[in-house]
Image (tube, rainbow, N blue to C red):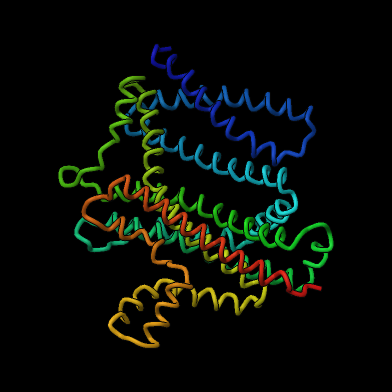
Length: 398
């Protein structure tokens, strides 16, 4: 065995150990075995981690090309990203069931109901497939095709979870109220606010679950499009982050372990670049779900869906209508300003202006804008849910 391989094996075993630790929460949550049998299960996991690390080191040693090893690093980090994302949802529900058991139980039931629906996986697969297809579509933008793919992928990651959230909330809340199922639940020591807030949190987390899977596809699609359009000698790939190059030079240097670590760091950098846009887009998802849940306390499913569609369209058009009617005085201008005041400013959640531009936005300014949009989404969501609680408080469910 070469010294490089002996150095690589502990590094790969450590990486697989990290994957195993990230997998423990969701494996324990899915396992229904008693505690004694779980100990043997954990020992099997440790053995599989050690064996997997040795095999992974052998694969990397056989294909020691820096580009291939870096791709393996990205793949490793992407799997870890999904596991940590699943762990986040497990921790959230554990905390809710511990400190807010009534609403937590309703939220968990709503989340499981939403994720188990065929519509959830159909929209997730369709959205991811549309992203993949966008790689090979010619856009005739004279070298700006990657920006078009970014705009499409961000839009799909925002629209599909919003569609799922609105449909699921309008069906779930309306059916339980109109079908008198809520009577059984509310006859127990469960307050109406626990029921409604639990439904909203569960459906929103289910939409966030879909966003997580679609964001996984988003990062890979943008990476694939960047290399798909790359022509050696004519175009250049984006430069590697300086912090990552400094970290590798100080640790492993130009070795297989260093190339693998570089791939992991590149995935982290790609996710960090995509995170502000995903947060802005999910603000719209959360806002529309809150509106749909609030409306579902009073109107049936069909009316709810139609109202959400109208609110979505007017929410995007209200600023434009206000600007156009500015020279006009009287009722038209008043109605336009009233719509802009009451309806959510959904144009704020559009990230295309941050993507389709000659020079990238300043990181600090983009972060501040993302925080402002997130705060706006939280405030409007709180207002919508407060309105829904008021409407639901005197609703006859018996």
